[in-house]
Image (cartoon, rainbow, N blue to C red; front, side, top):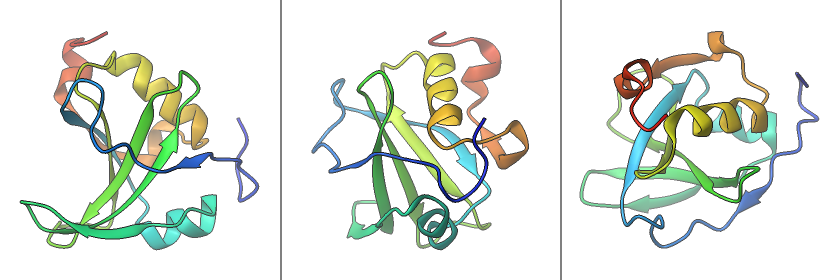
Length: 121
């Protein structure tokens, strides 16, 4: 797996909505948006939704789907949460994200319990 700052991550404009109409928090990576910008040359946009102010960048995964890297202003800890389509195969989405960002399991500080339960796999 490629480790380092030459990782080619394809940033895309976030869709207005995920295809299913909803998203799901899949994993939280240990890096904040500033570190993710430095590592992957991503530009995070600022926005606001019904929860809080946020920073967001969208990336294209190998299957054509998107992963949204999102950090809400009021979140505890330093990580960035990755959201995927609520109808996605969660196990496959995690594999695609790990590959796209050259992440190891140690880089993940939280994962949805549905991964362990096998939901969407």
